[in-house]
Length: 130
Image (tube, rainbow, N blue to C red):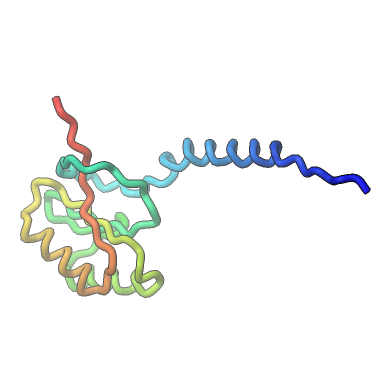
């Protein structure tokens, strides 16, 4: 009886090609926030975008959840509660303009926490020297 050898090289080549294609295409597809917000700059690194729940707060006081307007903090909290019932571990990203008052951002963070968010992050832009 002959030993049967399975050649996995073609399979590995196809898999690596698919990974490269996904790496190139995913940044173009994943960006889903069209609300213009000037983020504060920090020395932290940028992270990869997941299926996040994004709360945007503009300099003129407009509050949006995934680019849909929300008018009050209680309405924000109830909207987040509905979204968090589907997945309690979804990351809630707060995108606040750098000119916004710190106390308003803290109120948004408190509303997200009160809504049951287990993972909360504040979006920033990487600091560029020079």
